[in-house]
Structure formats: structure tokens, C-alpha cells
Amino acid sequence: MSMKPMSDYSFIRGIHLSNMPPIRPQNRPNFGAGPGARRREVIPLDLQLDYCEKLNINSHRQFGDYTIYYADPEACIGFYRDTIRKCWSRGVSTMQILFSGNSLDPAILEPSWWEEKGDDYVRAMVTALKDEPGLLMWDIMNEPSCNNWMRDSGENRPIYWEKINAFLEHYCKLVKELDPEGCITIGHTVPADIEPSAAWVDVISFHDYTETRARINNAYQTALAYGEKYGIPVINSEMCCLCRANPYDVAIEIAMNYNVGFYVFNLISEGYWGEVHGLIYPDGTVRDPAGVAAMYGFFRNRGPNRIKAKPNREGFVYTALKFLEESLTDTTGLFNNIPRTADEVLEAAEFAANLMEANEMVPMINPPSAQILDWRAMPLEEREKHIEEIRAFAYNLGKILKEYCQVL
Image 1: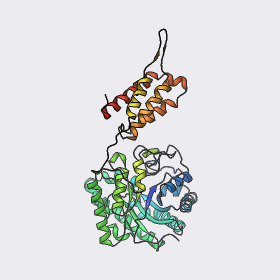
Image 2: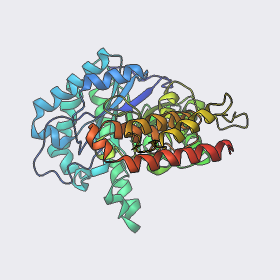
Image 3: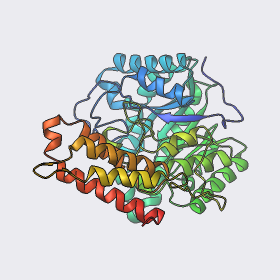
Image 4: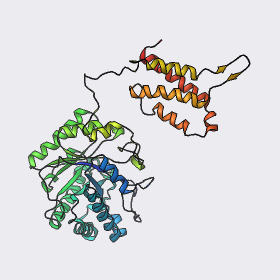
């Protein structure tokens, strides 16, 4: 049996996986704009679950799609069922999403569509999946208000919003009828959208990508006030985005401070959202270790008790500068001049780069050590062609070291 509604979901440490059915429906408007679409590569689910295990992730959200279902009902349901089972075998529960508002076709909001297609799709999905032990809850619709139809509604927004809520009410009630003991939520775009649908769900679910601590706190306070009003638990089912000034470590820290379960968007940095989302790369490396540390409850020190690193405490800055100077000085004699090799310069540059990165002296958007590895990955002959660029790079590292450590 699927999990019954609980009074507390603060245990959720969730993620969004890169996982969509390998079914491509025909004539689907804007197919590829959704959260699981336009992937550059397929990341094996087993590998993603290995990462989930390392990160202590215990739940994920799985996007359903009625157009995929109608393209191949049996294969679609088989895919969702297999994913739920495989994830649960690794200790990861599933929030199964039925509809997504991101690519909303307003035609589905009409009762005639419910009768013709929508109800059959929901009945098939719920009947097939409701008894899966790994099914944590149903999300009737992801971000109902986040779509071009609503954005362009103008003065018609109240009418449009009423139509969406009629759709949500219909399917909340249908899912509850089909799965009376199951748990229902709606993944609202922002806390302000929570009413009136809070009366139809077992869990209040909101998304928050706001930009400052004050705004993030306000989102939680708003959502939790609705939770108290309706006597049901609250979760944040989407958060963390680099281009929205919603850092992973900050968003996770605040969620933990409020003791609210959460889902980070998303696990893997790749595909359509790779530039602004993701805790780790497909190969298991990370963009920002602060996000990974936050999953374990460790956060960057931004308080007054920060200790400034002292890279020259044991004189290693002097050693590094001498090493750089030697690497940039050709071996000379009376009748010869032997230039330093690229590898000799890179060895000195790495010494300096490691000092600088370990002591947080340089921006990490393109860390010096990464540039060094790029050059070292080249064949020897190609690397030597970049010797002047490498020398200038090493020289600039020395300048930064001297200025930061006030070394003459």
C-alpha cells in the first residue's frame, strides 16, 4: 500500500531526478519545455540513486504527463511503476505528479476534456500506482499558475485562476475517491496561491525561489500560517536556483531552521537547466561544495566569528613565490639559453593555485586549478604551444599572492 497521510513531513530531504519516459508523443504543444525535457544525455537511474544514497536523499518528485500516457499507455505506466519501485528499493520515496502547469494547455481546464481524456488518464495512473509502497503522495499539478496563459491573462487573471482551481478541485476529489487512504498535495508556484485549494489537500506544498533571507523567511511564514489554519503539514517541494539569487546552502539552511521537509531542484547539473540548477555533475563532481554540505546540515560561516585564513603563516607564500620566479626564469649560460617547459611552469602555478583556493583568495567560477588541469590534459606538443599564455597565468597568480599577503 502507498503511504497514508502523515502529520509531519519534516523528514523529507528530496530531489528532482533527471528521469522521463523514453516516449515522445506526437503533436504535443511546446514539448520539451518542462522540467525533465531537452536533456543532453541520459543519466542512468541507478547512478542517480547512488548519488542520492551518498547525499542522504530520501524522496524525489516524478513528473507525469498525459500526452506521454496517451502516446503509449502501457509503456508509460510501466515506466512510472518501475521507477517508483527501483527508487523505493534504494530508500527513496516518490511524489507522483499528475499534471504540470508549466506547459499548460488551457483546453484541459474544460470539463469536456475531463470527460473525454483527463479522467481516464488519472484513473489509469492512480489505479496502477496507488498500491506501490514507495508512493509518498500525489501532486495533482505542479505550479498551476506558472505558464504563459496565466502570465498573459491581464485583467482576466481572476477568471483564469478560477478555472484552474476548478480543475484542481475536480482532480483532488477524483484522486481521493480512487485512493481514499493516499496523500494529496498541489505544488504551488508561490505561497500566495495556496488558498482556496488548501481545503482539498492533505499536505500544503509550495515552491520558493526568492532572493533574500527576508523574502525566503516570509514565504515560509506565509505557508506555515496556512498550515496552521487548515491543520495540515507544510513542505517546500521546489527551491534553489543560481540565476534567481536563491543559493542552495541558504535555501536549505532556512528550510531546516523551519523544520520543513523540502525538495531541491535538482540533483544533476545537465541539460536544459544545467546552467542554473543541480547539486552535482553527471560524473559525481560538484559545482559548489556548499550545497552538498548543506544537505548534511553544514553551512558556510557568514557570522562575525569568521577566521580569516593566513596563507603565509608557515612561510609557504615565500616558497611559492620563489618557485614561480624560478619557473619563469630561463636557464642561462654564456652560450646557451634553455627556456622552461610548460610543465615546469604549471607545477609552480599549481603550488600557488592550491594556496589561493584553500585560503579562499580567488573567485571559484573558473578556479586556477581547473585551468591548470585543462592545460595538463593537452598532448605535450599542444601544451608547449600555450607556453606564453601559461607563463602569463603563473605570473598573475604570483601578483595576487603578493598583494593578498602583503609580501614585498
